[in-house]
Length: 572
Image (tube, rainbow, N blue to C red; front, side):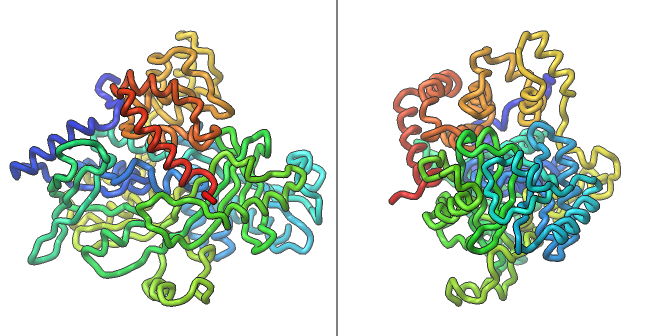
């Protein structure tokens, strides 16, 4: 353990080194520079380190700042993709789901799903059971059944009985999406990769005669007071991989004039569990447009979502829910649970993510010319496949699903082979050993539980499994380096101050919102964005990062502005 890198890259030291090398034209030439710190970028970085490549990842905001912290939190096969005839994507997704469930218990957990069946509804029981039979067969499990009305109402007692015929049960999985990104990044750092948040890629370096991409220029993007803030740093590399998701066209357009990304917004409501208690996921059809929408448990709260709309706003500004989306989701809750009387007063927080959906060049041009209510393909009808393009040593990977990030990463690195000198010839595409699918290296839970008992740490195996899933072998240090009072759950969540202290000290926290919205999810789960914790958090920031009161107050002001605009109700 002594040789393992417990902390993320020393950001200041690495930037100083890169700056010095750039100024003296003596910089290291990386094998791979990954642009984008979401799940796809993190997966590509991990795959690169597995192949023995020197790799650097840069992110213009914070790790998982975009789609990867604002998804629907589901690791799933995509039942609707079967209905659309996309058996290949479903099979891939289900295979990856089972691998992730095996490798990251406590972070990714199986969750029961109930598709509600009502009279004269399409699809009905027969069609759903047929789809679920195929779904389980593709996954290699048998996990579906029909639940009659009586049993369903025992499970969800406040569910409206109107035309209710029962529900089709199956399972998928739920995840803390941002923590998945951070866990993959941590694994890569432990294997020798380097990562930098709040560093913006300003332009590609290209050979003037051939147009081949030779590297990239970057600059800090922290809003910090530093003499080096506007200074560009030149980095050279064998390839640059564009993993910027909804932003992918912007960087790719430096080498090819083509638009292929359709940004679609999905928004969610977070409700206190005691106001809308559900122990499993309920999948219901919206009364107005018959779109399937989930009501499901997550981190001690209940989430309602998602919407599916074209996102026309500036991608560099955090997405936020519209009043139309709030009304749409509340209408669903009112229709399904009328006696609960859920209103805007019950909403703890909201979050909106922008999905990078791949579309054709022709479809992109059509949508650019026609009105919003035209015959352009509806957002919910777009395919969710990923795509990888190789353009003269710029590899672009975008689209796809949270579940299949590992497949996207493998395909991106394989596409880069013509420009790479592979150090590890036994790459994961051909390596059939179990290690080729291994994402994480963990000590067994039994070993951690025994250590906790010796340390007289009084926690359940389930809680320790949760911590192990999120922090891997760093879990033991989190327990030993914090006192018992910091290990108590905060509010209805399972997060604790011990996790906050670890993240502040070891996980490249630059701003308060990094901690409350991504390293932990307390800003989503506690009222007023977790404001009641501010005094305790201030002490930890003073101790671990040396912040003074002026710095703290600046961060509080910044955080409140972000939370109010993008993680709560629309301002009226």
